[in-house]
Length: 322
Image (cartoon, rainbow, N blue to C red):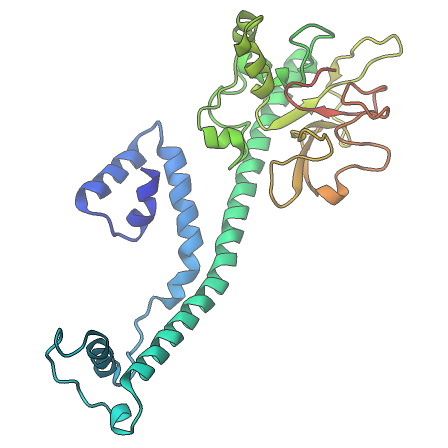
């Protein structure tokens, strides 16, 4: 039904199609996504409202149009007397005036595109940002609830096949703090979002899938479009739990790194979202992503692995091991 939303917004659907769209908007399984898309379209076309008033037609437009049509089709296919317009009486050909009208219309359309397209893009970008921020607030609430009850944030095991950064998500789902398929861990227009069927597995599903190709796929995507802290190792080499210290400078979750582990590809504008231990999040451009001496996606040894001390924070993608 999403392909009919534009027609529904402009009231150009037939009665049967309009009823189908309205039924989809009322359907609990798909209404939230449909309504978000409809609201986005409404905001995108809102700037056009100022141009909805009708404009008077230029003097002589009808006569010039008929003259142009007659000139193009010939008298044998259009046996009408060509009207004499002031332009023809003055010696100017009707087709020339008609082409001028068409040129003016094309120029107006181009000007409208130049003005409207940036507004539409800004509306889409703003909508994407709001959805990501709402999702981050939900994740922050789930992580803090878990941290308050368990005294630590989700932490991967020290070793084994489940020792992955993305295990935080199945942990929250198994603890009933996140819904598996509500899209909280998906960034708008990402590969996972375009699939339309992303679902976070539970711990039990991961354990049952071990030793199968399905396990590798679950490990790769279970953290969604976000990466999670790989914690740090003590001097003896043991992985330490992610303590709930409420540090405002300690990243807990962020946009998952791309394969290069230098930035994320989640947002085309180059911005990255980072959620910190104390629950606040920041939006940083890729040019300012890594603070001096503290790379977001690598430890101080340059590795995508657990930090080498409590202040060495590393955000790993779903499949990365500490």
